[in-house]
Image 1 (cartoon, rainbow, N blue to C red):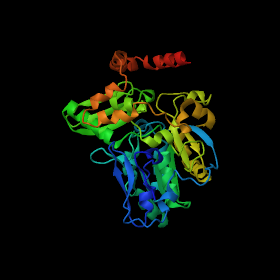
Image 2 (image 1 turned 30 degrees about the horizontal axis):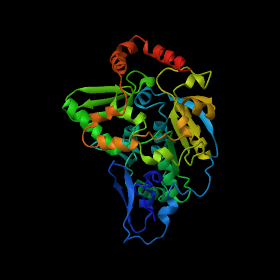
Image 3 (image 1 turned 90 degrees about the vertical axis):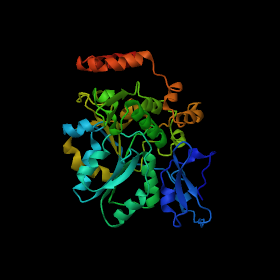
Image 4 (image 1 turned 90 degrees about the horizontal axis):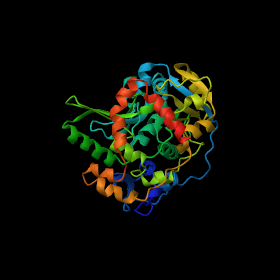
Length: 399
């Protein structure tokens, strides 16, 4: 029986495999005080079958070994797809591949209140909403059950999610399906959905308007300056980079992550997924043939023969450069193998934030006057092509 309490929350990634597998419907995913979902067992319904323990990603019974570790730096040739994607636009090509085969794609999107959820769709138009990063733990609901139903019907299904979500899905299914394609990404961690909603409420009050659209990492100032962008119904617009945005600054501080993110069960080069995708911040250092145009490249690692076959079908949509997986991870994918470290003030920050005053997060993250000045001058620096030069100077200083 799955039993999660305040003493072992680091042993649950919230993948929902246990709640979906329970034959008695005895396990419900419920929010804790921080807004993260954890399984709660109705002991009166539980028959102690042990299935929940069997499918838990933290109860791995064998080492995971990838069939392949082929790696590429890729960039979608379609300028529209590239601009609206976080990096190189790989997932959009997979979506097209699956939909053209009368299949289903499952990915993270927003609902009408901008909660991040996983949804299954079967039209190419609907998959557009899957583009772009969403730095929030998604609500999976009963999507694993829906996926299994489609797979058993013989439908081609693609699931994209965090590494622990893909691992949870594979454990839940308990067997390999040839008609399942899985895509994970190098994940830093996941902040609380409740924190995200508190942030949106803070922005709506500040701009005196409901939110119309949200982009976590728009390419307003190029790929290398990902910017939180929010459009409001009253016509106003907010932009803020990781340098000054309260939410992204908190996320990158590692202070608002799920406890399991400090002890992730899905780290490593070996994955159960077919593909792993992650940012390629220094693509020109991975291939002498490649020129970084600041529009976004993705690093892609292929783990399976199935993945190899699919990539052969879709790679004509990309500019493709062969790279070494180890080098790609060293430059821009260190989170591929490493979990983040828990800051000492992790336990107290949510007490402040979730009491309805997000501004208190400034006590825990540093936004300097220099940060604010640089942010205000960014538009001019970008137009004058100075921003790219300053970034290179900063990198050389770090070296």
